[in-house]
Image (cartoon, rainbow, N blue to C red; front, side, top):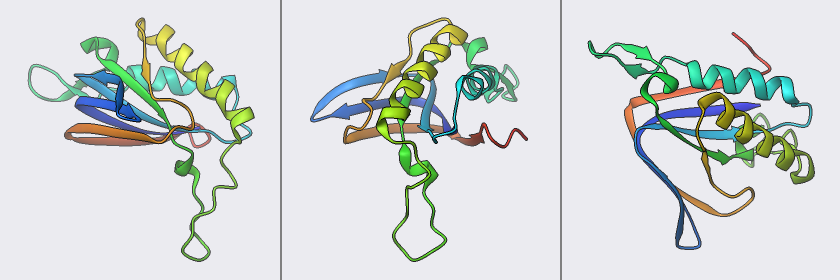
Length: 150
């Protein structure tokens, strides 16, 4: 699993003109899934995200986590995170999991994040044409790959 985490002052997801998710202070998580992702990836990544110290403390030092600030989260499926661009100019998405494999993992990730954060998580809709708006705070953008735990 690969995620792009963006610290946001606000974020929302709109599908066919209807706003389906909206948060203020928290994170927007773009989630890409490959075929060999499993519950171990979900558990590790969810724990990493909720405990990642990317929010300012009283001295404006990034010392607080999403848990510490009681922040919110939106998760958006993003198969393009696994784009291969080595050959030519058209990206290949062959590494991205097909919907029949990706949807259960996506749903399990959202559930695990809800457990770890202790509150409901807002989402886009898997496979939909989504319009994502965000006000990136900082900007702070972090990329994490569960297959490369550095």
